[in-house]
Image (tube, rainbow, N blue to C red; front, top):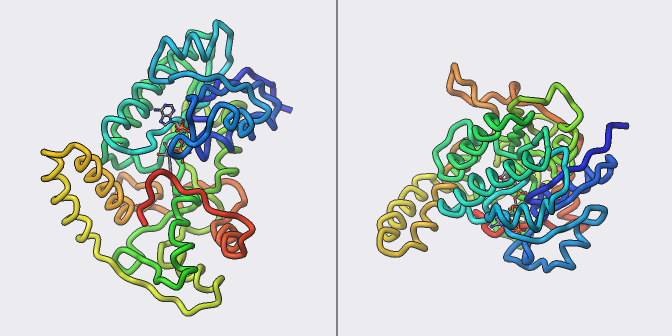
Amino acid sequence: MNQPRRVFVTGATGTIGRATVRALVQRGHAVTCFVRPQAGVRGTLGREASTQLLAGAQVRFGDVRDAGSLARDGIRGERFDALVSCLASRTGAPRDAWAIEHRAQLNAIEAARAAGATQAVLLSAICVQKPLLAFQHAKLAAERALVESGLAWSIVRPTAFFKSLSGQVERVRRGKPFLVFGDGRLTACKPISDRDLADYLADCLDNDERRNRILPIGGPGEAITPRQQGERLFELLGRAPRFREVSPRLLDGIISVLSALGRVVPTLADKAELARIGRYYATESMLVLDPHTGRYDAAGTPSTGSDTLFDYYARLVSGEESAERGDHAVF
Ligand SMILES: NC(=O)c1ccc[n+]([C@@H]2O[C@H](COP(=O)([O-])OP(=O)(O)OC[C@H]3O[C@@H](n4cnc5c(N)ncnc54)[C@H](OP(=O)(O)O)[C@@H]3O)[C@@H](O)[C@H]2O)c1
């Protein structure tokens, strides 16, 4: 049994945050979550719903963007041993990304440090190794701030989540083709389940080998391309595979138009960034990038856990489970 700690959690109502709170509670830690009063996708979780969702943890409400609220409503003058942050911008729009992925992360790190914490676990993303998007630069700035904070740190950079690879299950079930960029083999990833990632994050608190390290991490098994995802989906549905191939250049056109219009209409600038995010994932693999060759390296991408994307697809197809979608979905 690992040593129980007092753990302060931010981003607890997100996909990985919820699973991580469960993993921390299971390990016997005393968990305090700091969440906003209207949380969840499109703010659908009120205080009571968040408290139920995060059963076993103490739930406190306030504004993580405000250092005063963090101290007053979150920390409340108590001592904590560690911070676990699963905070992330829900929109990916540049202003929100910098406000949450950077500024709010820094607030949380500082509040935890002032409360006596000696350790922090930060959920980041593998894509920051090739930063082209606003949210990736914001994440990297937060990573740097944590490294310089004086706390012992673990920066976890996972590959793709199941929810991000399940957006087409419904449309394919309804008889539509599976959309792929190029021939569907431009990219690959090693999908990781919420539970496996949560276990990995929670175990960072007690695993010395994960201390003061940047930790890229994927799920079990071989890397999978979008084409393989589609093929398995059709197999599970007992249908012949049907793909629609889309050129990533289509997104270039959309990005140019939205960027130009975005100079006049700010909401369209945010949509342009969303299209840039879509283009990034259409063309970049979620695997470790070899700095010497500039190529993605499936074998060099560490694995953890036992849940597979294809078992998850089987549960979605049988109706045993339903997919959680984010505020924005590419398909
Ligand atoms: N999707 C993927 O495949 C993938 C792959 C690798 C890494 N990642 C990274 O993993 C991280 C977590 O992903 P996720 O899917 O768990 O994220 P998520 O479900 O969108 O959760 C985001 C969390 O941050 C909180 N948050 C956002 N804006 C906030 C605000 N203004 N004030 C207070 N809290 C705020 C949310 O709270 P509310 O509930 O109140 O909104 C929620 O708890 C992200 O950094 C993402 O980049 C994702």
